[in-house]
Image (tube, rainbow, N blue to C red):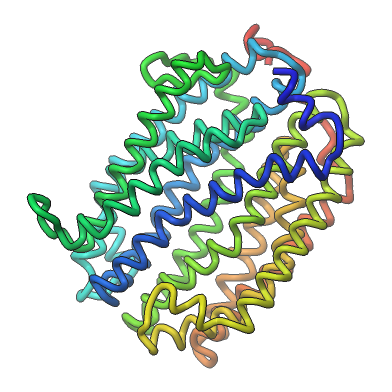
Length: 460
């Protein structure tokens, strides 16, 4: 434990953060590659109807991931703090309980999503021309959902110990496999029939399954301190309660963001099939822009958790400053490149000129505001590592539900899609402001050291 721990609780903060974050950036890039590869192949081989179908399905998948993500975030915070405190027994015990909760959560959500897929699509005002595509794609995605979530869990547990390389390897295996299978299963090859849009969904689900199998084998062979065996489950009420205390607000925060996207998507769908297709591309552009910022936020959270567990609260300030400098610099470059060369980015996904026109409007209005989100993500990383996820939930509620969605519905009748994008940019400013104010209030420090009690002895 000590070598990994020293990388995050001692030595140069900038070096430690960069070393921790680079594999996560690559991992996020590969994770997004799942969706990007699907989008490229679907856009070229299936067309606008296929793009529209994944655009309609995506917000619901985000909602299900938001609910499940609470478990992984809580596990990461607890593992990080106990690892920083050098409490190996608690790391083992918490990882077993987290696996139990994750399995129950992901299977339940997958079953619910599969059964109610048609009703969800109707709620979103999905066009009749893409209804069948949307339902089918979403249901197949639900088959792969438990595997996707298991990877997120293992990644969070290992990240809590300072290991971000192994999750990258597991995901790289799945990404390469998905890259190979996508065109084969969409168009068919030899005995494999052409499955169109469904083929892309099946390729992703199977790739996720293989990633899970590889990660389970690795943890078993290496006798890792992280115990995520789905066949060796442990339930503990006290740990579960603590994980819910941390995880539920974070899940609610993610859910709020996803619901706001869903409501905006419902509004966007009223502008027709091409508008829906443009959102599919816009979300991929969004994902590419966010991946280094999300990785930095996760890295800040992990370093914060370990240093709080080790009793080094002053070092957290250094971590925050380093994170801000990196995230703002990266986001400024990405915003400038996107605004100057939007065609290069959009043409990665589609050559349809109508879709290109809609997506460029998104880039011009929303992309400059990611600099504000860079500040927000860095601040949220510290707050998250301290386990103060309830405040993050409140910030998201006010920025997205009170400001973003109502404003979009108010100004879009006159400005159309430009009004929706403007509402998003304005809400990003408020998101940044809320997080900054709370960070500098220092209220996140109160009761932050969860690792002062042993999880393995049930004294939480």
